[in-house]
Image (cartoon, rainbow, N blue to C red; front, top):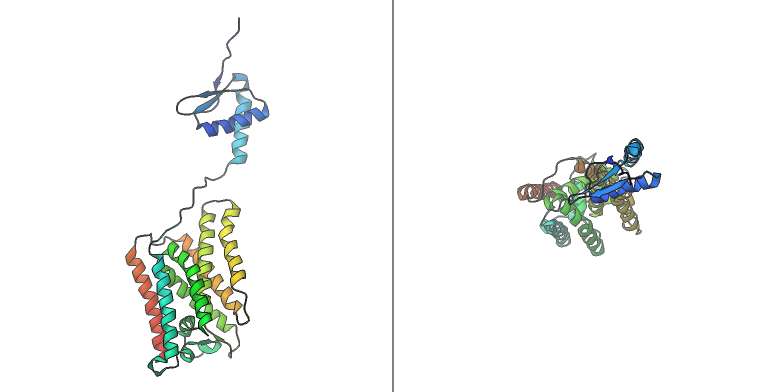
Length: 294
């Protein structure tokens, strides 16, 4: 007469997939077990003489394979991001028309262009006015295109108003640093520094969000690597390209994006905050041009 085998529970009731993983561990080390399945899960049972070894093997498996839980990264998705891109385009086009028409009998280009002597003269506004000036139509069109390409995802992440206020402030800072590193006769103009500030903003924000979420290193580094690749591909060509300005914009944008990822930013749907930030960016530009033309 066969003697019934007595088994005792080794695990609590687990999800079937997790129970299968634990069973695989016992299979690998040759510990006999019985898998019992119910309507709500599964559990492993072993004979008393194998319980200590089985428990030891499972503890080792859990210790070696423990990872913090990786929750999916939830990206902010602000509505109306296109409004920020439209506002950016309208400002650049309006300033270009003013330059071509000589509005107000002013030489807008000489009043707004940036050079290394701006700080000695106290003309801080030039770091902003120079962002809206362009050498020719092709220069303008390229910055409109790339500004939309990189500015739109920034507006989706931060909202159209907050994004462009951050981009304007970051690009102004980067332009000022760039100007101080050039000889006095070197003039700077164009929105490309703002374009690469937006790129750095998006890339580093994505990097920091993955870093905080304990994502695998390949996933964590992907946004930043992609940003650097885009900088290298789009920001270093052309005879008159100011590579230092592009690099400065990207570095400053990277710093701002990493900081914002650690802060509590306005949630999607807070339209009042976006309006205030957008109007603040427009007011800052208007003040800069008012001082430049005074």
